[in-house]
Structures are given as C-alpha cells and as structure tokens.
Length: 245
Ligand code: MN
Image (cartoon, rainbow, N blue to C red; front, side, top):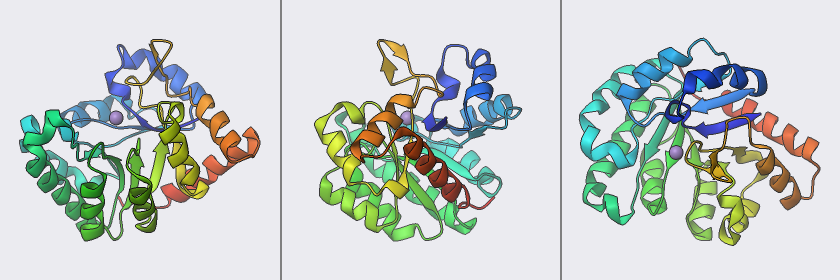
C-alpha cells in the first residue's frame, strides 16, 4: 500500500499505529503542518523504514507560524520531502493570502537552491496562484498536487508544468473530482488518504486503506486492479528518483 499524503502525527495515538503501518504499507509520506511538528514527528517515525516524514508549513497556519519558516529553511538541505505547503484561497485565509504567496515562493526558491525537492502541495481555491509560483521558481523540484480541485484548464496547465497528483476518496466521490482524475496522465498519479481528515463511515482512513482508490482508478482506466497497483508502484519509484537530499 502506498499513501502519498497522510497526517500520521494527527491521529489519536500515532505510535500505536506504527506496527500496522510497518506490516501493510510500502510507502507513507507523513506530511506535517509546521516545522516544529516536523522536528518531533520525524524523530518518532524515524525507526519505521516505510514512513518518510515531510517538513511542512500548512498554508492555513502560515499566519500564526510564519516565523517557523526559518526552521524549515535551516533543515532544507537535509530533507527530500517538503509538505504540506502551498496556498489556501478560501475566505477564512484570505487575510494571509499575500503572506502565504510570499512564504510558498520562498520555500520553492530555497528548495531549488538545494538541488530540488519533492513537494506535497495544497492548492484549495488557489490553483492558479500555486501554479504561478511553480512556473516562476520550480525547475529541479517535483510537485505533487494533493487533492487537486481546480478547473480543467488549470489541470491542463499543471500537467504541462510537469506536476504530479495524489488522489483520494473524497475526490472520487464527486463528479468533478472523477472528471479531473480521468484527465490526469496515469503516469503521474499516486494514492493518498489525507487521513485522519478523510473518513470512511465516520472513521479516519488509515494509511493502509487505499484499496478503494485503486479499485476506482482501475475502473476509470479500464484496467484490472493488479495493473493499477503496478502502475502506482512504477510511479512511486519514478517519483522517488527525484528530489535531492
Ligand atoms: Mn492534508
């Protein structure tokens, strides 16, 4: 099982989940929402080989925690994965929009100075703004757009910029999400749970519960589940060849 965007540190008792993660998962990208959280989380998860902890600064937290960007920049040379980062253009975060653009732009530029990183990017209501930053600064980095929710036109632009996409069950439960996913090139798609925020029957999805995504993805592309799984495995290994440490 592959989970390319999971807030493993935000489940009720993350350490109790580790044995199952180790047993069922091949790869989990444990994204974090602040550099301070990353400092602690990356230590806790460091003993589990399949868990890779990304250093992040969630756009919704940029307003309160922008000082922590210094921690992120200081650690940039030593990490391969950066996320969750990006821009959120919803009403609640509109007052910090300029600061969000500034911080995200700096993060991408610092990543480039370190040879390029792999990003897990939030772009809700801000797809064009995110793509503007990537177009301007990202050359060697690889961007995975998590929970893409832009327009078809924005999707085409993201594809032409070389973006990847991590897809989840919420996207697959709406007509718009399904349409977008069916237009994404198979070679640039990976599954994500976005747990514990995405739930199934009221219970947070676990990082090993990506079967529903694989099944629907295989239906969309008229391939069987075994083939869908091997597409995902190939994609993961191509993605992991990116990003300097
Ligand atoms: Mn998330």
